[in-house]
Length: 115
Length: 113
Image (cartoon, rainbow over all chains, first blue to last red; front, side):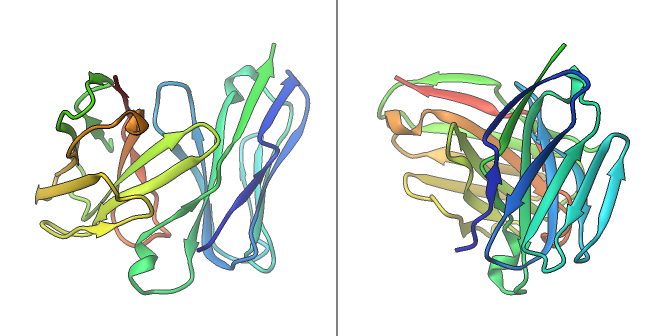
């Protein structure tokens, strides 16, 4: 069973601060996705990273996939109250068997940005 | 725009009842999923379906069954509800392999009394 460990579990910061959230595994993934979930809603995809070492930017959010495709990070610059939510990483397995239908989700990082 | 609709946002049922949770997607996606989300445990896959009338067990299928009679609709059934099935249930759909984005509904918060 592939596992994804996210850290920290909870994060409370002031508006304007920077932060980094980590997603780590001992397994290799073919790709990794980041989702954000706001209270009362389902997760929404932010980005998919596919290539080892890949960096993607989405406004103030920077996503990086580790060189070995075992880990990823999400960095937020100058956090805003609108960034508040649960951030989930999800890895797609390398094999192409029946397990390739499934994503492995981390348990999430709950971010609160205080105005 | 992509839309996954879950029939109820909130549902309260009693122990032993048979409970149906419905999910409809309008994107012609072949893959559909049911997850439950619990504090400290994250999202756990209950069942998924990769085609009409096809189903596969996920990580925690015990106490649940599913039905996929039409491509757009995926139903989750709690055969005899128990209090430990109180949870947030999320439906998702996806076109193609696991590298593709999953589209989630807004969830059904189910309470079993």
